[in-house]
Image (cartoon, rainbow, N blue to C red; front, side, top):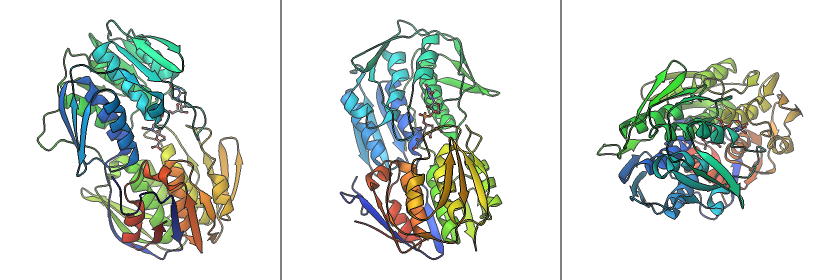
Amino acid sequence: MKEPDSGELDTIVAQRSSALEGEVRIGGAKNSVLKLMAACLLAEGRHMLANVPDISDVTLMCELLEAMGVTVTRADHRLVIDVPEELDTAAPYHLVERMRASIVVLGPLLARFGKARVALPGGDDFGPRPIDMHLRALESLGAVFSTAHGDISGTAEVLTGTEVVLEYPSVGATENVLMAAVRAKGRTLIHNPAREPEISDLVSFLNQMGAQVGWAGDRLAVDGVERLAPARSTDGYRVMPDRIEAATFLAAVGMCGGSLFLRDAVADHMTMLIRKLSEMEVRIVSDAAGVRATATGRLSSADVSTLPYPGLATDYKPFLVSMLTTASGVGIVTENIFTGRFRYIDELRRMGADIRTEGHHAVVRGTERLSGAPVRAHDIRAGAALVVAGLAAEGETEVAGATHIDRGYENLVSKLAGIGATITRR
Ligand code: EPU
């Protein structure tokens, strides 16, 4: 698990870098693999996943599964997950607190064992992270919940297919209700589900396990089955590529200039982002092997507004904000998903960025040059966006808190160094 550029070294030092050139391979998607791992709980037996990124959130999810009695073997970007017949259906606080995505074990546990106890996730750097929609959706299938001592306990004698209406297309709520509905009695129709590519990856994994899930227009139609079994594939189910990791490198080439090929990146998963980057004058072409991005000269500003998929993902926003700090003109950025997700802007200001925030809007006035400074990563994407900004800043930028970045990136430093960035970890 230790990477040559990670270990106990918690600071990434980025220096102003000239044009980035070469190729980077994009790894498996964090926000897919964590859910696929949870989905394994739905069936006893040996599950295999391939293209699993070597990131610390995967380590945490392994720990969570192991705490329940699952045996996980990890090597060579593969996971072998042996799920026994009986499991401890409790997800303890010390793990849930470190990774909010742990909540997605709720649906599979209820579906398979009729009970689950999961510590309530607290807030985080984006602000509060409620799970009310997860619970309401599961209740509509017949689950009953109570809370005590910081845990949420659910029971379900039987889950029955029904019409589930999500008032907002929450990614996590869609995943939880989907993983419960696959073993419910009868048909569930999920109205207003999240439609992120990671949801489609989960749907195809579940279908390979024997589930019957399909898209009915914008809705998800789930015909419950009695039993699921591990997906049959000799090489393991291949996790989809990480579109947010791809966005990180697109931002880096946008800010530093140059030409990069992102092997395995899927342009169809990033249509809105590619459109936005084109507006900002990053040229992008793609084929089945990946995405090529080229940037020369100063970028142009553009307005950015985050929305559920197929809109512009909130996870792209820190990278777009970094790019806007040195683009010519003014960009207005509106955050519609996580209202607290502007905190890292204070760090960019320390680097000379001209950004004014007002509620969930930020006005970014491009300056010719950022100025390297010590800054701190408070979450995965904001941290990576500071690293990218550091590559375009005069002098040296020290990004402390790099272990946050490790939660979602495998070898970010060596991948960037491999395409010509001046970057190290200490
Ligand atoms: N929300 C509620 N109630 C709920 C669920 C969500 O009010 O019951 C609100 C949230 O507070 C938030 C909004 O709905 O304001 C969106 O939340 P959503 O449930 O869609 O997000 P999530 O499942 O918690 C996943 C990703 C995030 C990504 C969001 C949005 C994972 C592990 N996380 O979170 O990714 O930003 O979807 O696309 O899949 C990251 O990778 O660093 C990351 C934070």
